[in-house]
Image 1 (cartoon, rainbow, N blue to C red):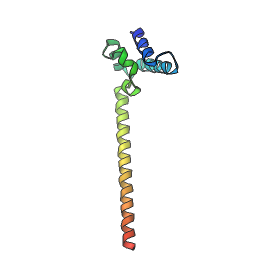
Image 2: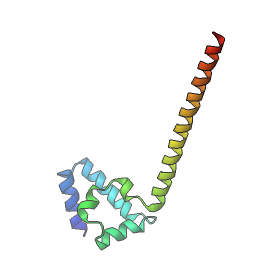
Image 3: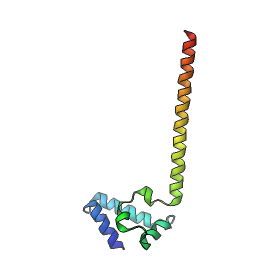
Image 4: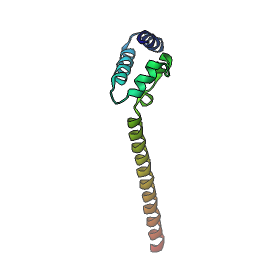
Length: 103
């Protein structure tokens, strides 16, 4: 299994350069993560093939807990942005209203 994973990573990065080494370290870290047993199980049982695992992003390898936390942060950031845009629009409209009344 390990040889297949290394071979797949080698093919993706076309050598053993810095990107290959960083990708290998990332995969090892994610497989050893005690908070992410699902990834390890999926790789070992063959649910995730070595070719797929070699090209997975850190978001795809993340545990369910981390994914949920990222989703919450993204939703909060979107909501905050929408509220700031709406408040900005209200401020502009209020300013325009007062400017018209002053004329």
